[in-house]
Amino acid sequence: MALTRDHKLGLMLVFTSTLAWSTAGLFTRAISQDIFTVLVWRGLFGTAGLLGVIIWRDGAQGLRRLVWLGSAGWAYALISGLGMVCYIMALRMTSVAHVVIIYATVPFMTAGLAWAMMRQRPSRDAVVACAIAFAGAVVMVGLGGDGNLSGDILALLMTLSMALMMVIARKHPEIPTLPAGTASSILGVLICLPFAAPGVPSGDQLLLLAGFGLVNSSLGFALFLLGSAKIPPIETALLGAMEASLAPLWVWMVFAETPTLPTLIGAAIVLFAVLWHILRQYRR
Picture 1 (cartoon, one colour):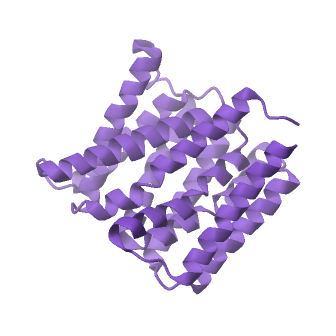
Picture 2 (cartoon, rainbow, N blue to C red):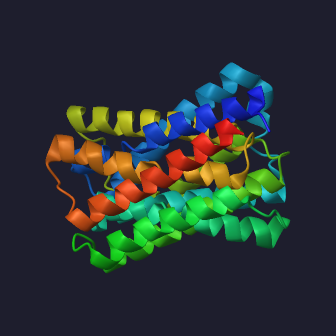
């Protein structure tokens, strides 16, 4: 069956959000502030960017939706906020490669949750692609030696939260996605504010924090929220899994953080799974 224009737009938006999110390791390595200070300032800039998108798209009415999210919307926002805290902490505690390839197992988690919560059976191609991506993650975690157990556990919790977000967004399309994403950013700031350093970071650090919030958070999150509502959760997860190949590449190019051979092999397997699945969809 041919893809609709709306479906193609969703694929493009989620893919672009993956590119923006893949810069997280770069910003995390470049910023020297403590983790809670990073989370607070990233959240502040990210919130400002998302508020700008809401005002541009919906005006004052969009701001009012920040309060009226509904139970599903607030659950989405809380899970997202906690997941983002786990994500940034994991990037500081373990290798970027481990974080993003553990995240690549999100299709496996999403498929299971979508079946449990929505009785939505994934296609045979999607199941095969998930199995291949999961095998790539197993190669990395089982054979690679560049990770840390605490950081890997945090990355696993972040992955679970992302899978839940994808399924909730699909099950409850009435959720105002951008306001819910903005609320999650605000919640993240409130969670981390008591532990952050007082004062304003120096000029170059503040600039990096602004880029982290506006590019990685605002742009990535806005595009993800808009795109994930247009395509099935399993496809959203598969496109997001491409981050497993992109993020270590950027960090290697800039900071020479070289992944081990098993990590590289695992990333290549994940990328193959994603591209194979998308090509199969377009050939139908």
